[in-house]
Image (cartoon, rainbow, N blue to C red; front, side):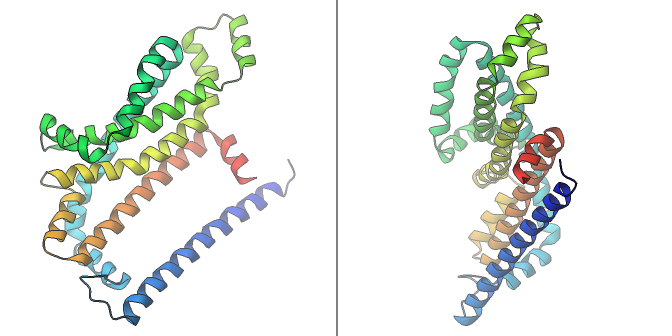
Length: 263
């Protein structure tokens, strides 16, 4: 590797970050300009300044609801990781199990969440558990599929090498399948991370006492569009934070994948 590779890679990452910040500023300026130019009422389209004011004014209340949503998203995502990885390993270990389970996973994913969520609420109640189950329901599929497809694409030559050493199933996963599939696993995790907050909010929309979804319902019922936009901003920031957290963890556990991306 040439000495100038690392600085060049760091410069490219910095440039992409600055470009993203610039595009966000342009979007906010356009948004502010449209609301000012056409003198749009706040109930129709609040400006970024009005939205930011709503976030600041309602900060204690938003923090109260944010805690519940973050807890549901975190527990649900954790359960989805456990279920997704377990199912992927079982499908990879048994062709019969894969043929039996894979079609059902696809069918479940095709069912609209808005149709399944009320049933989950009925079965598990209005407390945290139902939100966790909803998040796990929508997040398990991308984790399971990305992991399973990664297992299937592992180099056959490495498999044969482990065969010659009479490696156990656990040794195969530890030394071959999991390291080789880490980029795919984290690709599915990043998708699931963005779904997790959405699933928690949808669960809160359907019932509960705390959560950003509850805050949004109350803002909608009182025609406080500025508060509705404030909640949307909070959800976006939360989703982005979880996504970046998973991305950083993936870069730490699979640095070779990050280097290939930066090249």
